Length: 189
Image 1 (cartoon, one colour):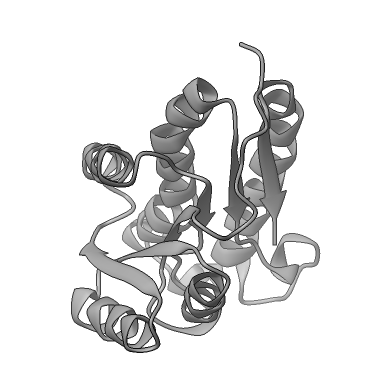
Image 2 (image 1 turned 30 degrees about the vertical axis):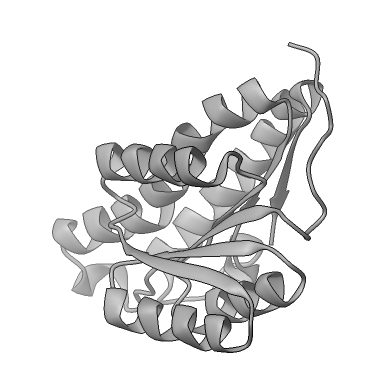
């Protein structure tokens, strides 16, 4: 496929932000909307996502909210397809949803590990897998994955989070090399 590089910088673009109810995700959603994007806030905390979307809309910008569990691939895939069907395109995916887990490994059980892997890594993978075929067909798009400084340095008591953030950085770098030839950009924050 030949990339057409028709990504819209911001004005008129469609952007999905997972984990958009607070912190980085909320700030991203607000700024993207100010720049002219239609923002879709995807979060398990749908009441908070609707609150953020309402605030954005009250400012005259475009936003809506959807309840989504990023660890559920069929739900993510359906949500992304519905968004594209409604807006006609997908310019940005911000894979930002995540949970923090701290404590020494001896205090963790396998359910703790599984939950952080499912959300913080599985959610990124599910987002990528849901948008990648669409962006390939479009010949453009930008996937932005939120990592952390924890992906670069080790801190005691932070093994699960550090492990996942290393993986998100590796996934992003690998995907960047693959996707560039199709006009798809990949970044890691």
